[in-house]
Length: 77
Picture 1 (cartoon, one colour):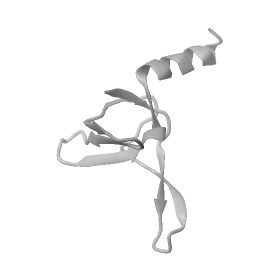
Picture 2: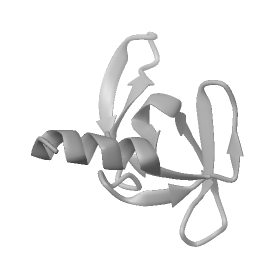
Picture 3: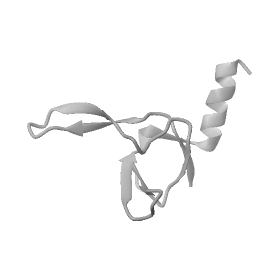
Picture 4: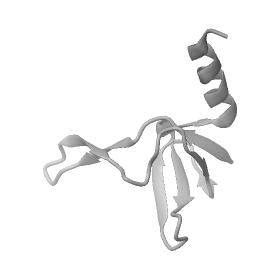
């Protein structure tokens, strides 16, 4: 499935369990990614080198159709 990135930060947790925001260098807002697996709340991708799987929260991405709709709404169309 093709999805578009809408946020390039992820929530991580330190050793005490406290959350913090982390800017992920793999994520580029507006870039289209192809998922290789999807769960209810996680999407899994293969990195560009093809040697590592990366998993992310579903809320970081939207479908291409939803992305187009958001862009058109932003333009007032």
